[in-house]
Image (cartoon, rainbow, N blue to C red):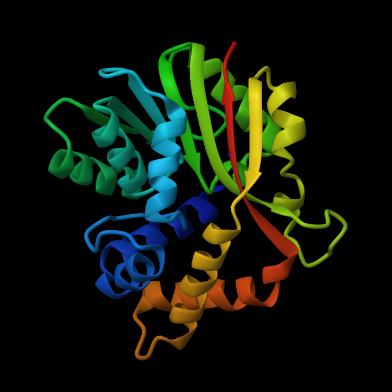
Amino acid sequence: MTLEKPAAAYFDKWYADMAASPARDAIIARALGLPPDHQVTGILTWPGVAELAEELRLPVDGLLLDIACGRGGYGIEVARRAGARLVGVDFSPVVVEHARLAGAAWLPAGRAEFQVGTLLAAGLPTGVADGLMCVDAVQFGEPPLAALLEFRRLLSSGGRLALTCWEAVDPSDGRVPPRIRAVDLARDLPQAGFVDVEVHDRPQWREAERAVWQAAVAAADPDAAVRSLQEEGRRSLEQFDSLRRVFATATAP
């Protein structure tokens, strides 16, 4: 993901507002069934976290990469469940620092690292990881296939990939943002060199997401982070039936 400085600065402020907003976290935690202190950026339910952890099949003490990790909550929880080591990568220095603090609080010392990097250039060695997760962010790869190629580079032979994202119900639907119309994981994962590719619809995740947007739009006296969530919620509800929620897994041969 290559972003110009104004866009990067926007996301730095977005993450800073998020960290200062217990109200935003509470809205998302209630709708997704998350623990109230679970700091997240994406829109993945608690049962979805369990499914993702299971499909990664991480060995104890294996290395998990969380690319576009945001505040780190999802990767921290998956690593905690698997007894794995964690490296999180995000392009925002602000959110990387937030993730470091969360990792120090929830994982044993020395088990988690967080660094600045992008979907297309994580800044890590080839074949380093036993598993790689990317929650709700692969669409920011330009194009998404380039991000998948980077994921394949990072995984060792036999390493597992788990992705959550959205795809267009109808790729010709003009309501769908271009970056989502570009996502076709069943097509692109084999092109990126993966095998055992499976892409499944997750309508129950989508309905939980609807609950997030409805609760956000209804929130009274919002702070900056909740106002941002409200704006995203209004846009998302207007085009809700144009997207499907997908969960993809694959193996590096």
